[in-house]
Length: 160
Image (cartoon, rainbow, N blue to C red; front, side):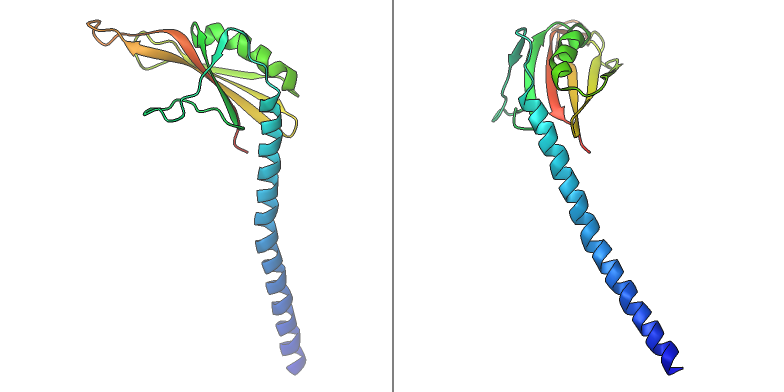
């Protein structure tokens, strides 16, 4: 009985130690992977050269902010609809891409407003997402009609 008690106690101590190591190591490992993912994405963002038709914007301090550029994202305003700008966005992302781009567009629930598109591209050690959405405004006296002649382009590091 004494030997089985010692064996069970030893097994419990080893199991507790293994659980503690995994409980401490796993979150630290995930945090390190998150930092590496973000850093790789930031390096890719830093190497993006936007087309001359894209005007950089910075809405820091604005009451309503669509996009504020930082190490994780770039913000632009471009003429035309989001679909009109897809080719330019893909061209800007192509030099940093390590694989094919995925494009997904969805219609707007606002009458007269063009669709919103997302371009996702893998980069070395991370992934970038470009959201291209209309800069719409309501037409006075047009019974709920929205119009847009330009698009916001936000290029950012995707969440891991």
